[in-house]
Figure 1: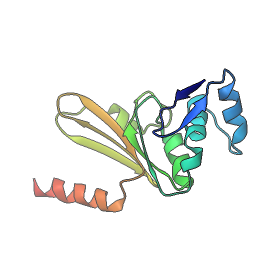
Figure 2: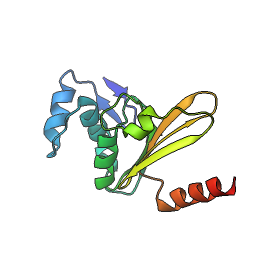
Figure 3: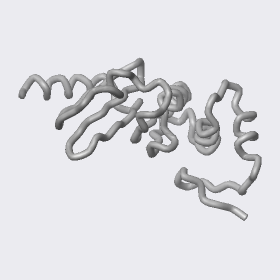
Figure 4: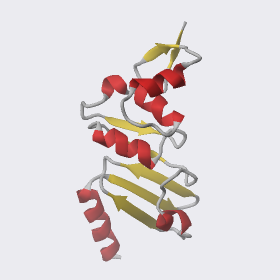
Length: 139
């Protein structure tokens, strides 16, 4: 019996011991089971220059950094309760503005319009940061 996975276009057999097998398949240290699952699901797509869009359940700075080392970009929403979220982003109280922190290829942003939204990206590079700065200076 096959079940569709969160990754478009792939299916795999249901396996009760999947998390354990996912961790064994990768040679790197995976500290979170969710990260192991994500990396196993997208394994056929890695090292091909693709971009993975994820929701906040699967995303974390560690997953984003690992995917970037595997030549796969990552973009999506992010939970502020995850490990390694920059304190500047986590603690900033916003009023219809934006705060961002960049560490190597990983960018974490938080903005507020009606509600606060937190995002992580390895897809948006230096040119995006420069445009954001230019936009702020125009105000």
